[in-house]
Image (tube, rainbow, N blue to C red; front, side, top):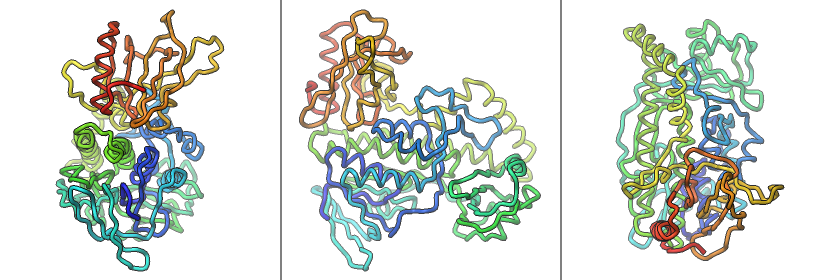
Length: 513
């Protein structure tokens, strides 16, 4: 099983990372301790940026076919929702889709790309040197094996064995608060009664398969350690205490307790070992940001690690994974800590009056479109922007590329496309833009093939206007959909010089194919 990259963990983060590596021609094996795919789903949602990532690879229709879209989401379980419908995205909604479904879809894609998933295999140790990583893996029969790879990535959750074996610190705060969730096959209440549960701060949502999920924090049990199992009697008692009814819940499919321990890995990379997803950051599941942040880690890391393995990465490219994603992890953990505080304070007797006033203030603020938009951008991850190393660089650099429509000069528009369709193969796109109002628009050109990093050189007319792209003439789009370089200069020589520098900085090439 010696290979280029070993990914430890077949959750959503590990599977998407494996897909990205395989798409770039990297031999990838996934090691997973579970013998069967996960059936229970702690996470239930995909946010707008995660759906955009799937769109970047042509996978969005698979997810949308199985999920259910809703136009908003919540912040700290406040009554005023975040308005995702107002966001600048082709996917301005939350997609309700069980984590088990997300994993199944990504595993299906991984198999299509030739990824080997070794279930029932557990990492027991690792050792790295300048040439690679040696891992000790125990198989289903208990047989130990020594596996070598150029790199190893830990996507193995909050208790990551990879992180521990690599000696990466995991600073943060211990658990001080827990909540419970339960998926029930039987609920004796009608929808109107369930609305009273939501009014009392209990999440009650229908799941596929006829299940209903309840999630709540019980003031009398919120200091119970997460390791303590949840019983049906405890769950019913908590519902009665909070809502006055247990809503006839019975036949539990899954009961679980979760806590607010919040930690962020000191480093996302240690030599040839890297971390992504919950192995790099854990927090209270406020607003469902954990799974989504992990997917975004995987998309950022995938092409960079592939470049390192394939030999075309410029110096420092792989280190930029930590530089770009660690601040995002910190922002997400801080965001969830704020939401947890807003949810916890009303449950503590001595804080109930000021906590009610604080939540009221936030409700008022969320009613302001500009505040709502800012928090929606944060939770949806559409505001993620990576810093540019160049002073005075175009403000578009580091931001996600808008998925504008592109068209030819053909009045019928038979060759019309959009930016994200150009990124399905996981390469760079050098987009030379003309705008709809430009009478000298040039026709769309098919992406050119080339060796090394895939760079599609495309000239197209913008079929729609976008404020961030006003005056932009050329854009180099990274495989993860973020902008590597952009220029608004009308000087052809300046554009040529800037283009050459950007291509060399990101791909070691000085020109597109």
